[in-house]
Image (tube, rainbow over all chains, first blue to last red; front, side, top):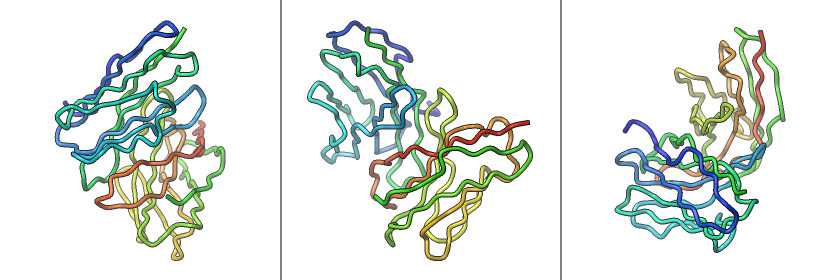
Length: 113
Length: 112
């Protein structure tokens, strides 16, 4: 597609459940990023993938959070044993290696009840 | 990445130029200045970036001071649709696809 696609657009889950959030980057973009944005807050970096290099996981807030990127394309962010503080909009972005700027998706709004 | 300082909020009348300042006094020689904006309920949108020369594209102009310690994003004819939070970010480029560190940005309100 023309842009970064994220699914689902909205997710409501019960506390303690696991969730998976999906990101389809722009075709050919080698770099993929995950951010999250809590209500009224700024963007918080979570993780990024660049080609076949080891991902930069420095922003993951706890070991309940993990992400993978299969075949250098689609990425899945998994949150285990969700907590209410995990409620936020999770944003994915991609860029080519020689990039002018990231292209962000519309995000997944996660609500933990 | 160098830290940036931006005003919390600004107002601009529709049709007038919006000038959004950013201070980045600790910027290093190989760091670029990027601007993004985030319209309510949407993901951030890339606007423009530059190293030391002034840059212009279809969205905006970027003016970087000679000492590179500050810059100004100019929206030449602001419209209501330009109401958003504008983020000034400095980072390494090119070939160093790395994380963008977003600060709190400037909330621009364009009014009639």
